[in-house]
Amino acid sequence: MKPILAAALLALAGCASTPSSEPSTVFDPAAASFTGYVSFDGGEFHLFEREAQMRSAMGRPCVSGVLPLNMQRTARRDLPGQKVTFTGRAVPWAGNSTTTGLTYEGSTVRNSCGGEFVILAEDVSVIR
Image (cartoon, rainbow, N blue to C red):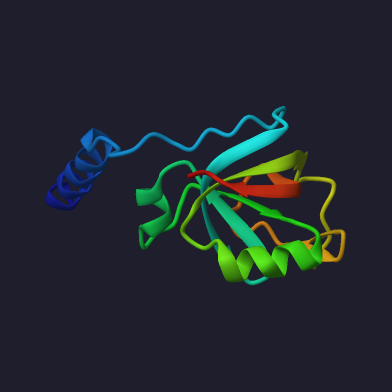
């Protein structure tokens, strides 16, 4: 019994002492614009603070969001992997979503990033 407990404690200690290579993404939900690297999944975009986070197999942390439907379709085709700024507003996920997501201007965000808020964007511009 003691060897199993010792192995478990050693494993936990190893996890606790491993520093994170990158800090958590911090997007201010009170902001009117959100800048980062964008990818698309289903009908929503995912915004990442750093390009390495976007390209990571884990793909986290990120913030989910949508543009109006026609803009979302164009962005999905033209912008994957680019650094962009979305202009819009953040809304809390809790209390505003249904089992099928949150609909905005014909687009549905399902919050696959799992954040406390999602971005409802009105516009997007590429950072060059």
